[in-house]
Length: 399
Image 1 (cartoon, rainbow, N blue to C red):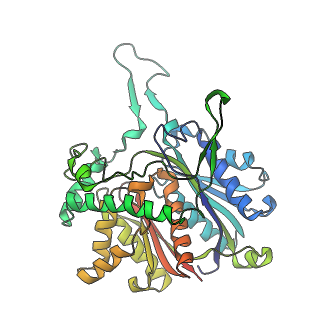
Image 2: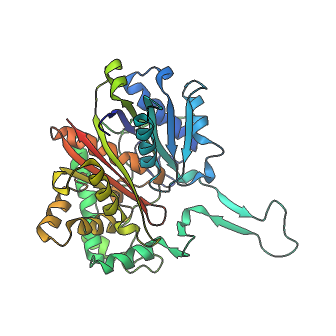
Image 3: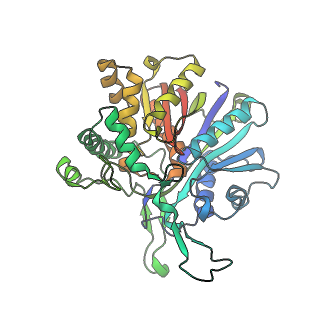
């Protein structure tokens, strides 16, 4: 896949549920980030062949959301588009679909990404259309994140599986603390400047100055291991707490992919190259280690080994995910395990940053690319689990 170039990559700050981005509707937020990705490189809308955008909670997005975004940002009506739901994997899946389209010579320029506006996710009122002769109507909250296949809360399955891999509650709390600490260290060093779009939030009713947002809303500078250890577990999970898992979030991310031919023709700077993309799937309770399986598959496709990786990004859907997945990748080698964890999520992860489900996959990719650029280049892997036992992974190279 060395002919697939990344020429633009940007995301919104990630907001808390009911926080800074709560008033953005799905199409509005997705359009904003597509527009930002295009404006960063001053791309001619006429050369965009396809747009792929993903979300895990389409209930609040109305119909064919990506098609609506396409028109809002001024892309021609002839531009092809697709709205994707692969749960948390969605925006990374969009990157994979875009890369495949370029490799098949079906497109030269593709915009790929995703969004989640959890604050705008509606309640579902079942049976209301035709009514009931007697009895209560059922209202369902789509933010409860239940596994409809096993009827088990995802936090319970994650906790149980993490213990099977000897990853304890204490391990997860310690990783969560590190996620916040690494985030603030990276933010202070200006490491998120490249990827985060500055947003102006109008004041209520237009009174007073707008609020300028340049950082993520969820990270907590006052997090401590003492505070984390005192939190109760959720939904009956043996290990998962509100402190070692990310909160519900709002946000959007987008990248622009180009064929090597088109990139040379336009002269846009290459941020990175997509070397391979892989999808993995297993049983509904296996998400906690599925990123490891996806990374292995992606490495095999690229003809690379785990030792070739300079940096790794594994989405912290729970702190357990990078802990268990790096353990699986280490294959019983304690020294390799220490090394893998030292190069994983070095600037913090979703426990601190937030996890707007449809947007996180592309966020991981751009965070990885910008980190490798700061290091002077190298090869990295980004992986994310989602959708009850699925995972996506991308291998990238920065020259």
